[in-house]
Amino acid sequence: MTAELRDVPAPAKINLFLHVVGRRPDGYHLLQTAFRFIDLQDTLHFRARSDGLIVRAYDLPDVAEDADLVVRAARALQQATGCAQGAEIGLEKRIPAGGGLGGGSSDAATVLLALNRLWGTGLSRRELMRLALPLGADVPVFVFGRNAFAEGVGEELTAIDLPPRWYVVVQPDASVPTADVFRAPELTRDTPRVKIADFPRGTFECSCGNDLEPVVFARFSEVGRIAAVLAQALDGARVRMSGSGACLFVECDTQAQADGAVDRIAATMQDQPSGLSALRVNLACAGLDAHPLLDWAA
Image (cartoon, rainbow, N blue to C red; front, side, top):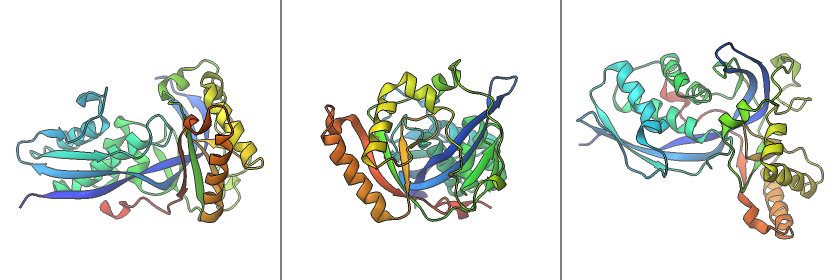
C-alpha cells in the first residue's frame, strides 16, 4: 500500500501590523509584527516515493524546481534527516501570489510538517522551525502553529490569543515583489519598538500600522487607489495592507458584517471606471485560533 497524505491544509496569514525597527549588518530588516492565520488556504497532497526524488505533480509557471519553496522544503528535510525516501507533491493554489498573505511560506511549512509525518523522520517543532527559517522569514510562524507576535527577522515568536474576528480580504489587480519594497531607500527603518503589553487586550488597533504601506502605495498606485475606494465604500473603515501587499484587509466582528462588506465593495467597484476587473480577490475570511496542523508536531 502506498503511503500518502491528502488534502493537507496550508492557511494564509495576515499581518495585523508590521513595523520595521532596524536593520542588521547583513542587510536583513528587523521587524515587529502580529501574525493571524485565516481560513483561506492552499491544499497539498503527498505520496511517498522509494527512489528519493522530489517530484512536483503541478505546474508553477516561471518557477524552476530549485526555486520552488515546496521543493526546497522537502529537500531541506531530506538533507537534515538523511531520509532516503522521496515524495510526489501536489499543490492546489487558492492563496493569491504577490499578495502578502504568505502562501508560498505556508506551503513550505506544510511540506515540512507533512513529510516529517509521512517519512517518519521524527523532528520536533523546534527542529522543524530551524529548517524553516532559511526558506524564508515567514515560514517559521506556520510551523510554530499559533497566532503570534513576531520580532527579529520574524523568527522570534510569542503566541498570542486573539478574539474571534472576520476579515474582508481584497487584492487589487497588482502583485508586489517583497524584495523590491524592502530595498526601497524611502522605507522607514527606525520605527520605535512596541510591547505586547502596549496593546488593548486581544486587539491590535492602537496606532500601529504597516511601515511598508507608503512605499507600496507610491510605487504601485493601484494598491493605494483601491485602499481609498474600500475606505469610502465602507464608511471610513480602517483599511490595512498585509505584509508587503498587495492584499488589503478590513477587520469585522461577525461573518454577517464581513459578507455585507464584500457585497458593498463589489457594488462600489461596479461603479468605478475599471469595474470589478480591478480586483483579483474580494472575499470574507474567518480568523483562526491556531494553524489546522498544530498537533502535527510536538
